[in-house]
Length: 162
Picture 1 (cartoon, rainbow, N blue to C red):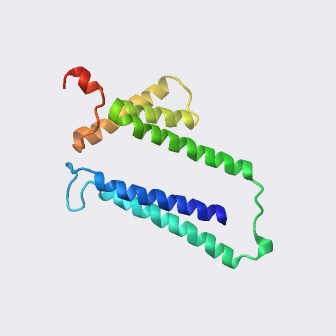
Picture 2: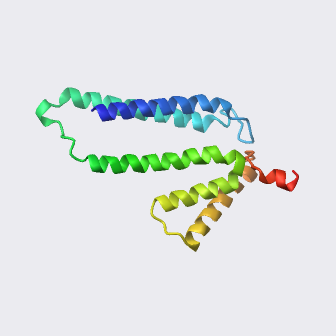
Picture 3: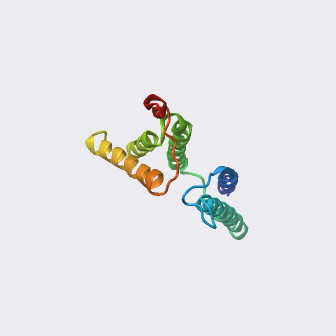
């Protein structure tokens, strides 16, 4: 129960921080009645709802479970693997956020795609390169060209004189 409550609290803090950061989203071609921040706001609200339902589940489970029926914590190794897997994905996301303005969106998102694929067990090879480069170009075309969301170009624009 304590693990679920701590997880719910952490998730609620992440949702709150994410909601606060949505105020910094600039208007773009997506701007309508909802605005470009519409989807991230809904995401933050859904994340908060998941956190609150996780906490409620833990409290209800505690209330209606007899002391002898509680599951012993005997799978700490499995929990550690899950936690390290989540921490690895979080580290990839943090590295992306830290690098995207310097390196640029196209290279950063292609690198993230490659890192996630490697983290999930993909082997290094031409297939991984095609996935990363193709995914990066696809995301860049979709957001930058089709939707008009100005993506960071990084130091490359300074090299080209733009």
